[in-house]
Length: 427
Image (spheres, rainbow, N blue to C red):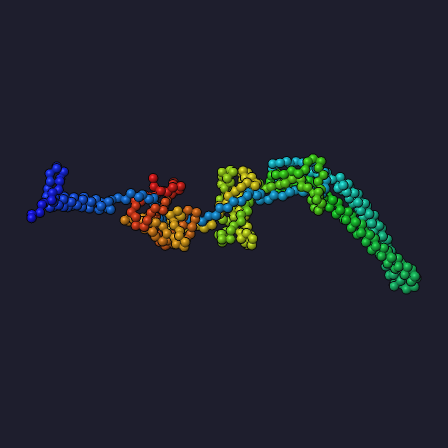
């Protein structure tokens, strides 16, 4: 029995034998496969070799000066500031200064009234006059006794000479009497000389007492020990001020005087930066309240590190020639610690740190990302010195690198970090 052929209905409604339909379908599928292969092969290679779409910002590595700086906050204080006390207790008779008054060294700021010292000076003058009278009396007495002694001594010498040349002419008793009188007057002369010296000493003591009281009386004029400005006034006219030399709790200063042509900043420098501090180094002092900067100089430091804070007491002198600085003003001092003029530098924002490993992303000559380990040295607030791992001219990626992978093709664009610090990615 002959088998019946199988038929397949085609789109036009006619039927084909199954074998013929199978061959036709295979031919169509093969042609389609060839067509697909011919179209997709060149397109895939073009996509692989085309321009990359990811753009990254880069900076070119080169040599530049690097400076290490330390900025610390402090408070401006006068170079000198004192409370001026009275040497002696008294009433304020005149007050020549007030808040904000500027004085020069030696200017009188106040005058006290001390009646006791005035009376003491008058007593001293009287004592000196009395001592002078005693000296004059003693000197007159000395002159009188000296004249008597000279007469008695001449009489004795003449009589003694006659007794020697002409024996028996003069009684020995007379010679002895004149000799005794001569010795007595000589002794009286020495005593009178001592009285004169004692009177003169008494006068000198009186004069010294007067000088002492006069010096104390001069303290009624309270003068400025240095040039400056009055920042506080504690007394008024008629105020009784106590002597500042006593331990009394009632002692009160008259004024407070501050030197305003020179200020100082006290800076606690951390232990790790102590080795960079030198006398004479310049310091930039910025006053935020004035929006100005002033030059300063490291003038002195304690040369030891405090145990509790691990800092060194350092002082910076700031001239105030135009009188714009005010005591107590907040200041920011920038110390220039170290400097390298020619250092291969990389921006810190281009550096990745993972544990102890430090790397940067470099765009190679084939525009592919290369993760390169680097060794850093000298560092500032924005840059770091590269000891190894980079060469001048290398293009280092800055900005967002989280989506980049090693070997990825990118399009590099050089950016200027000085003008676009907030976002170094290319626009």
